[in-house]
Length: 82
Length: 193
Image (cartoon, rainbow over all chains, first blue to last red; front, side):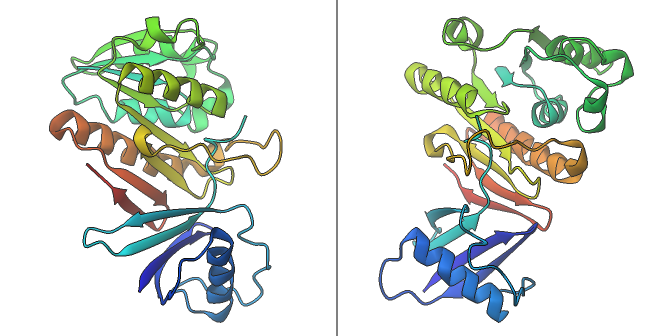
C-alpha cells in the first residue's frame, strides 16, 4: 500500500493506492487522472478532467517515517523556468 | 549567524521579514529595483519605489527593533558568488529563474554551504520549500515559460514565505532541514534531517 498525494487546482489530498509493482511517473499520472475523474480523491472530483491534465506535473517519491511509500504528484515550480 | 537571502522579491522579502526575530545578520542580495506593481506582493512601501530592492529592504528594517542587516544591490554571477556568499552560514534561494538557482546550488555544493530553496508554480497555486541536497530543477514545459507574477497570488506567497521562514528558523535553532509542499489547503512537511 502506498499513499498518493495529488495537488491540483490549489487543492491537495491523500489517497491510498494498492501497487503490486513499481510504477513509472507516467503510470502515476494515469492513475491520478482516473482517481480524480472517479471521485476517488477526497475534495477533488473532476468527472471531465482532461487526459493530459497532469502531463507536465512532477512525481516526487519519499519514504514516510515507518518506511511507507509516499508519492506526490505536484505542479512544477520555476526551479526550471529560465 | 549570517543568513543570506538571494533574491528579495515576493518570496525573499516576505520571508526575510519573518526572520527578523533571529539572532542573526540578515543579508539581502538583489540587483532589481522596486516598481509600483511590486508593492502588491512584496514587503516594500511607496518610498521604496525606484530604489534597489536589497537596499530598500535594508532601509525598511531600520524601522524594526535591533535587526542587523546588510545589502548588496548586484546580480549574483559566477565571478562574484564566492565573494558575496562565501561568508554565509545559511543561503536562502528566492530567485525567480533557474540559471541563478543552479549557479547558487553549484556554489553551495562546492563550498559546503547549507542552502534552502523556495519557489512557487507559475499559476500561483503551489509552492515548494526544499533543501539543496534534495533540489532538482524542474524542466520547463515550454521554452521561456512565465514565472508567477505575484500580486494575484499573495495568500499563497505569504504561506510559502512563512513556511520558508519556519524552515530557516528550525535550522537556526536546531540544525534541522525540513522540506514542505505548500498550497492553500495544506502545508505538508515531506522530509527532514
